[in-house]
Length: 601
Image (cartoon, rainbow, N blue to C red; front, side, top):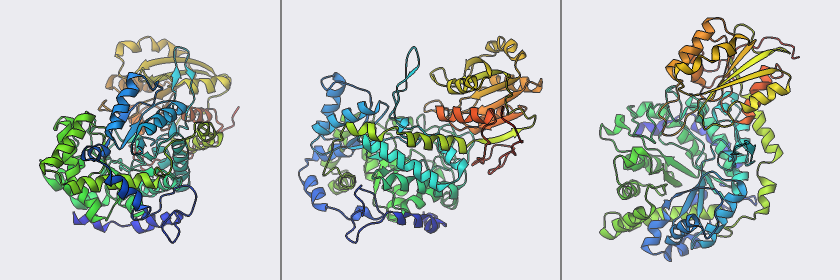
């Protein structure tokens, strides 16, 4: 696609990569292994060559495979750990680690590294901060917090702030805390341009709907990550923002021509490549507009991956999206998808459905001559160079006593609070309801997934601490209308009704909409003159389902810092200063409502 080569504004964005200083010999000028532009062409190639030379075909096939593992504690002798040990001893190249307490994650990764012939490259989804994975969540039944890494609001909050310096600071925290527990690469930032309000899986995971703003903030975020010695692997190339299908369920299509793709979807990714990004995650998206009705997923497309390699000269890691997702498994077996991805030019096979079958299929494809051995060696070489860039040729274990000194620090938590507070957007307050007066009787209606145990709790706690009388009613998303009958009496005595909408994208759900019955009931309450204040702790588009609500506030995420920031605004202690990074009809991008003068009690 020639149109992609003519993107504008990239040179300006790439200029900010100059902070990644390198010595004349190409090595980072600082002690931490910061990743400088062009770093993939330098380094101790002898380690890469020696390591590659001593690997058998089966071990090379295993090096490109990166399975998913849980971050929970498990004894080394447990069945769970012995299963992982078998994969490690087969030679897998790394793992993508999920949720666990920081010390549990670090200890588990250390154990796997000790068993590995070649050090493992550890990936994690840290797109909204280390707390997204380094978290103990809550202990039931008493909801005792277990602590963990720093959790930030979703990155659309950074879009509402619009300050690249803050985005970079968040990226630094991601890397500092992640590296402390043994994570080397984050599958972030999300560089999808969210121009489709009905997108079921991107939504608040995107910086916004303006390609240039997404590029600027995304480059700042990844610069922060890589300055602190972690690999940034943005996603979902070539762009998942204008789709209505969740690729966890099925294959989304992009019916756009090359000119449109260049102007919108591809622009942030080209900016990232120009800025020296370490890797790119390629999504399961069919580009029917340029490859026709039978287009394969981009992750298996030689043409699409060729835009990165030949069109932009990118020589970093190309990572597939999870090969266990519906967009792939509904069409290909695990072995076939893996071989096709390598044939197309991918280097890392992320989260296959069957690890052993994938390794066997790759090795068999080389033996049969279908997959050239040189193509496999090229992929393994890139993986080894990535390992070298993060220092795995020198040290593979992390000291457990460092976890306490680097994860969840007060200064990191303060940055998360700052992001939550500065990103609040007031859409409207036509009746002056936002300030909850002293002595006000407040009904808090919490709409959330039943599994979301913290939804509304920090907000309730903050309002009670400020002396407000709070009555709480909870009902699950999609509750039947019959469940609303008992709420009418609760609303009758309220001076303010705060509706906490915890509606966020979630894989395999297929929608981020409020159920029609719920929206109709809420809007009917507003039309009756009820003093409704909508607070969106997730999708900003959720408030459009209740157009008659007199007040609406956007808080972007449902974490504690976002709930506490919203409480500060409701109590008149904080004036919302964020601006819409997306259109929320009838409000345009860039909108924020004027805040009425107020005197907090």
